[in-house]
Image (cartoon, rainbow, N blue to C red; front, side, top):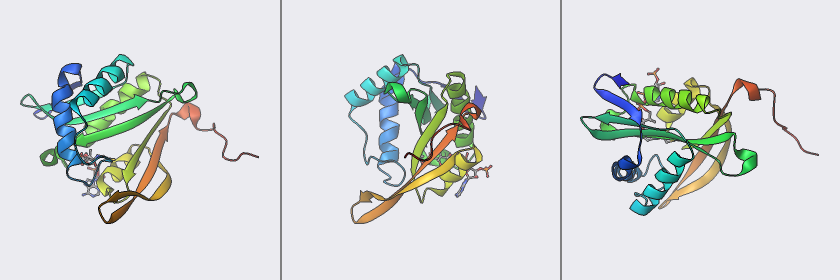
Length: 178
Ligand SMILES: CC(C)(COP(=O)(O)OP(=O)(O)OC[C@H]1O[C@@H](n2cnc3c(N)ncnc32)[C@H](O)[C@@H]1OP(=O)(O)O)[C@@H](O)C(=O)NCCC(=O)NCCS
């Protein structure tokens, strides 16, 4: 699917090097992700290969053949959490604030719905207002704050936990245990 000059398509293992590079660029901004540099290339290849083999949705946003964004939902590995996926998203700086994140997120959520993810959760730094505003418009609800959970040098930052439940789960879950 195209959106302006952007092509949205599923990722393949052939995207591993570009994915690793883009994640590294965003990580080094030290504002948005929980790591501060690219993972190792082997780590990215193994992650992407295993996650694609598990059937998880990984979408790529591509401009002129260059990867400029990703969005994925990775299913939890424990059997009792297999209805749950963790969402990740990121765009190269020059492509933010133009509606691309919304489009990429919507496509990924639609794919996750088809794959029967019932709960999609994510974390964001509490000052990442754009990401949080986007998640809120897509039905993600704040579930809590992990205070001072990240430290970048001398700066401590809170991490918010958000989740979006399929309608089949709206009356499920135990909020208290004896
Ligand atoms: C988060 C991210 C994917 C959002 O994508 P985007 O293309 O920049 O966002 P969009 O242009 O689609 O805007 C989405 C919504 O965010 C809100 N928004 C946009 N700019 C905003 C700003 N500066 N402050 C607060 N909210 C803002 C709006 O509600 C907007 O919806 P609207 O256009 O209907 O008003 C992108 O900014 C990004 O990659 N950021 C760096 C990496 C990152 O933060 N990843 C997520 C980690 S949790």
